[in-house]
Image (cartoon, rainbow, N blue to C red; front, side):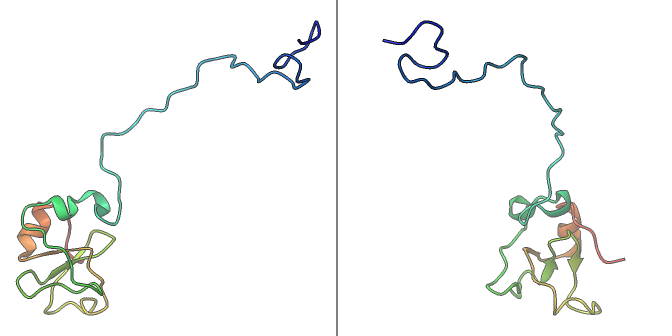
Amino acid sequence: MGTPGARGPAGTGLPAAPQPTAAPSTVPVSSAPLPSPINPAGGQGLHAPGAVAPLPGGGCPSTAPIKVSRKGIYHLPQGDGNYTATKAIVCFATPAAAEQAGYRGIR
């Protein structure tokens, strides 16, 4: 058995675990969606109506050629100098569908 005044488990000689002195504080959590590869810039990602998964390598199928980048910006196949370099995380058939899902066009 342990000795009188031992602080840890009986007979171990180890110190007792520290006891909490106050309840942990809580941090308010926002209800806004957090950016992620599937949900960039608050968009709906692959959960959006009309969303199509990109092809391996970041391209989009011909039926949904609008590319959405990780920054939440959609790129069009014609007239967008960044289209070829953009690796899509989600694709759409129309700019309107991308905007409805929470993404924006280039400025």
